Image (cartoon, rainbow, N blue to C red):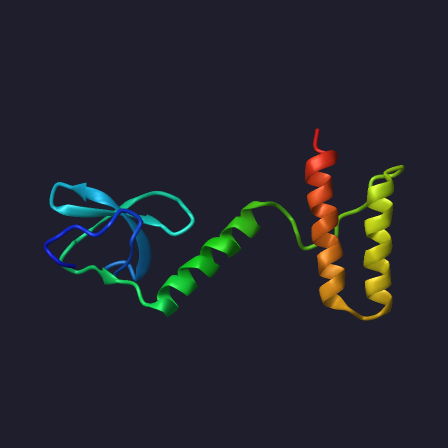
Length: 124
């Protein structure tokens, strides 16, 4: 890393941890980095940091997205429609039609829409 501090939010690779982090600020002799997607900051040696490559940035973003999915709850099972809800029934119909056509992508889309509908309309 140059003597000049990078711009806040710049993605840097820390070889000591093998991770990419978003530059936050300096704290004494250390650079403070936060994991892509959020989390607990860590201290890094500013002299050892370098800009993250495109591949490293992509990998860090995928890791953050996977972590968000894992922390969102069990998404391994398809959501169940709420009895008496017309929207749920319609989305279940889309999902069943996709299954009948062996269209896994459309089935996943229907599950995503049904899960989103559940979160917006049926959360207690």
